[in-house]
Image 1 (cartoon, rainbow, N blue to C red):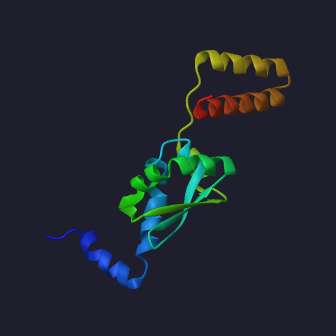
Image 2: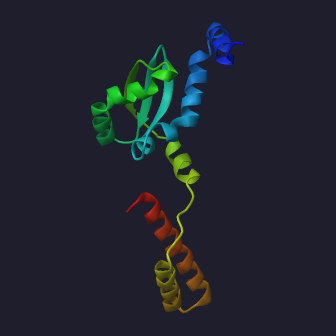
Amino acid sequence: MKKAGSLLDPVLRQLGIEAGVRLARMKSEWPTLFDRPLSLHMSPGGLSEGELLLFVDSPLWIQQLNYYKQEIIAKLTRYGVKDVRFRLGRVGLRQVAEESRPLPPLSDEEMDFIDSLADVAGDHELGRAVRAAAERSLRAKKRSGL
């Protein structure tokens, strides 16, 4: 018995879509390949002849990632990556990574705080809006680790 990968690789190479398939697989696994915050500030953009183009969301992060270039390449060798090039651009996977994580629960103390904010608002409709905004804010703060 042969592994499917050993049979598919020559076909993909012959069709000229091997790099595209590797890139698609890398994109789907991206949030698990790198720990946060790295995975949120860079995303794969293209793979050609072993060189991966990584879009990075700020010049500061490009500078920081240059220090980790060899470690990044080492993690991506199984996708055929031999070199990495950084470019300032939109990081499309950030939103996907954030949305895929469940919202953390709020403590009883936090819920009491939210209730007190809603009570101060007085108006029932305004109180509901304050409650919803406070819950979202506290959950987002907890999720980001602040």
